[in-house]
Length: 308
Image 1 (tube, one colour):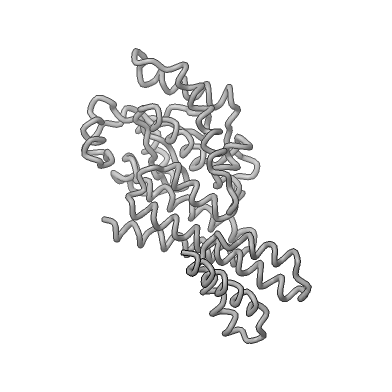
Image 2 (cartoon, rainbow, N blue to C red):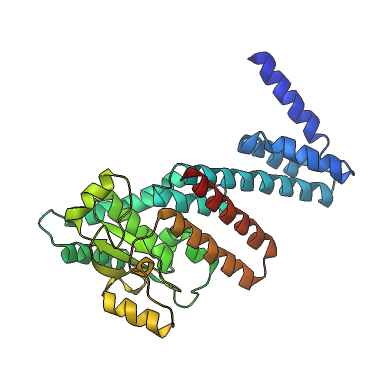
């Protein structure tokens, strides 16, 4: 083991010495090889950046290398999550958040969510009706913790990063719904996402016939489970009825389909989150981020297709 460790460190040292090679082909090879060591090598790169005396070009390559390694880690994490079925929606949202926040303290983010969960749990009991449970969720989320839709900066990228939404208490329809779903799932409340055009809402499914679908590890749809009502997390958890969805689709001149009334998959939700970020960064004029996020979206879809 000691010999292997010495060989490993020896190779890393040799590769680091080649970072400033003027041959771009050599640097490309060095970058790919160093990336195989993963995020564990980043502290050494950061130290090298701080101590270097080779100039701006060298520092730029170090920054490029660190970003390359971090992006690779995000891509692999998202791919792994999708291949495993994408069962935990909140974990998928954390994978996306790591794109912008590679040093994200995930335990702290989970603790933030769990504090809200604890407040809701204290108010819930088995005797409550579905509407009463939603009233508890809405009171704790929107009245006690102050969550709200970010209407002033609706398209801001920060609305799509789950950690910043939990910190600022402001988000878009999708991110607020993800928090709602994550809390509901952890408390055994059957709330799922519905992928409407230009909007995202929630469906409260009949909990008496949902259990067999949970046991069979499949998501409910319009033909297999009854949706009692819908919830608009962006509008402080307002109740939405099927007729309102039909009217909304009619205004958009979109033919109503089962997918507009049925719960969608977690893969679809994270895919929509990535699309929202692509749109946000495209509007801001960040083509590099747009390209990378499109790559993450392709990775998500390909991994999901292979897992089916």
